[in-house]
Image (cartoon, rainbow, N blue to C red; front, side):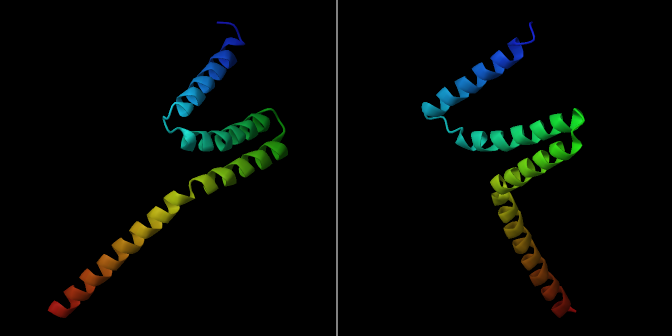
Length: 99
């Protein structure tokens, strides 16, 4: 395989995913995650090539973008934690009144 074939296969794969998205297979959320991940990878490549300041800044910016995209997970985790904590408070209160 030649060196340019990897990029060609990647472009073919992205094109296929775009066509699947246009046909109704909901891949919009994955594409929303793709750009921040690519920005982070660009920062890692710059870091490994010796440009540590620029690579670090780019990776941190990509991380913040990805954090914003996945913020709904933090809301779900906080809601579940509140429910579990409330249930544990009720069960603890019931145990202390039984004695």
